[in-house]
Length: 194
Image 1 (cartoon, rainbow, N blue to C red):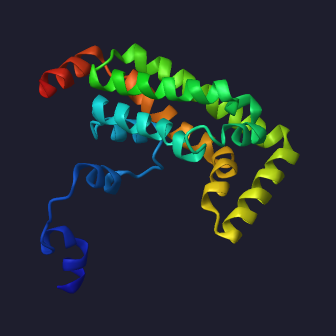
Image 2 (spheres, helix red, strand yellow):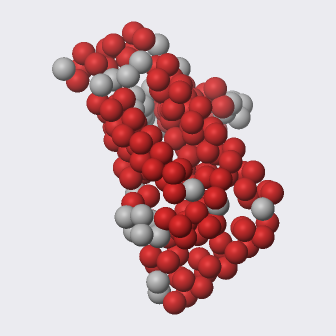
């Protein structure tokens, strides 16, 4: 009798409803491919306005890191190719573009442009990490010294240089998902918002 119950445990145990993603994961008999992950994230339905606002806030966080441009030259000294003073201004301009695109429910092609921008920053970060070992060690040392001294404002510029590409890679992924949305999905989202 017990052996029978073990063989047919699904009929013995009460079933509980599971969220759709967990249900899909429990039925998977193979490792999840990137395609499965992309489809699962796409089905979460990240609204354009939310994504645009988050990306804009991330870019405008630069004003806290460079202390309203009073430490812009210091930030530039760690990674001049990505964070020249002019480059820092353009980061804010991109932030405005992300916000406007989110609020106006921009076409998927615009999110593709944003994904290309994030790809460039991610690639620049990887290049900086691999090609400029001295600058990476200098940034790490300066961040460690500032944190040890309790000066978190001084730690912010080198920490940004050490981590910005990872954050941009996340936005690259999310912008790419938005770019892959069909125009019908984008129109339906605009209808829901209005």
